[in-house]
Length: 327
Length: 84
Image (cartoon, rainbow over all chains, first blue to last red; front, side):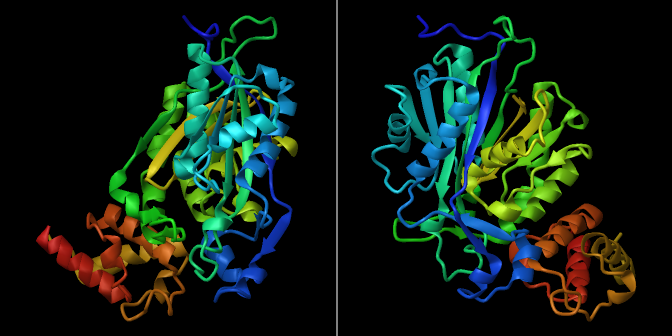
């Protein structure tokens, strides 16, 4: 027996929400800490400034802020949410999971709750899981959150990494794809996910043990991201029955502006608006894609019905891509 | 048939112009990528990937770090294309 009636037509995103910590950290501030400068950072990674959480601000705090905004924007009440998924690779503690705590603080009573670690691909993995749960009838509505406090895991004397990583959270509410009259929507809102991994590259981005900081082999990661991922993005389009030239927006994980630009160039979607949140948000891992979607929605850059291609990729290495319809 | 040094240089000039915007007349064998041509480590990766497409020669990251000058790349591609 199913818990809830499934949705044969699929699942869709109902709303987005984002949260950025108040503290803006400029490149000049980092130049006072390590041997770097504004021009070097802008040309290598494309970041002008990033946001860092306050010392006592937790991953759960940021997840609650973003999740609360998405929930409010969806028009649903906490009682409508059956499942909460928090994608994070930087929780302060491993036990308890972040999602149960976040659900409680949002007034969502007794939902299914689990954390998911697929590093910077986490949001796309969680979104895929949420969509499948709604389609299968395991949940009516799902709150999906990507939240990270990478600043906690960065060596602030390592100029190769401290200029890149940042903090924040983004969220989406996923529900049944139904038309205005309640009938199944003919247009599925979340296309099939194309995902994968390659554990041979596990040592290219890692935190080696609980006393270590985040390490990244920049050149190897750059080569992988700029050569292996555009075919995945194209496969996600094909799986959704959407040609790249029909995309209104392309939202890749905000790893590095040069990776974003290289991916966009190779995708073959010259008309699509490309998210470049990294410029003022830094690399926020699993939060970067929903943060970008949330900001673009708030600023009126997206229209309801727009087709958006998302692709998350990072440590593992692992990756996931899907086409969604903008609510 | 193995490519001549001139052929490799000509191909490399096209790649460097496209990726880093350095005109071909500035790309001479003795120039270093970092100091003379102002090409950074990520652009070097892009050049290596483009070189693989153009010459059929793979330049892995652990080899790439030793290729400091234009001549180093010409020699590497020349050797690899002979042994291929």
